[in-house]
Length: 152
Image (cartoon, rainbow, N blue to C red; front, side):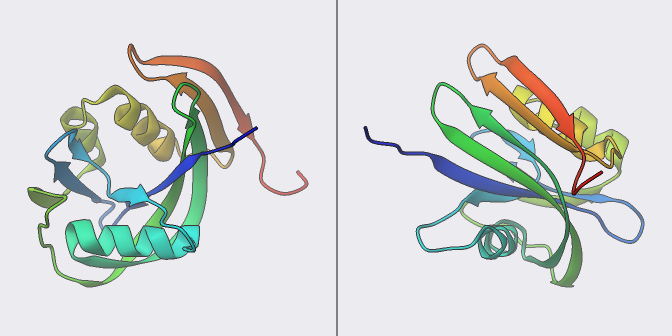
């Protein structure tokens, strides 16, 4: 039996004023930065690379938020929290616009259903890790749970 999963990472990057870094994708509209983990690459290296490529911002990873899986396409998305440590806002082939926005504005700007669901999880402030499975079209949550980190 052959197993093939695609893994992507994304980061909720917040500045000192609690603004969120958003990039505008030509395909999905506004979203938080992230992308596919390349062969031989760690999750962390992929996330730092993708954020820098899409936004021009250098980050440090500060936490783990959750993960989700598209059960139809066997793709897994892993979400982290990040803080900026350098760089300047810049667009790329993967982003037509880049900006810092407050949390409420970010929720208004993100309309792609999966991206919005993941952002809602990122912003929940929960100390638990959110894990859900979904179908993409039409978007439907198939299962969802939250888990404590560690032995709690």
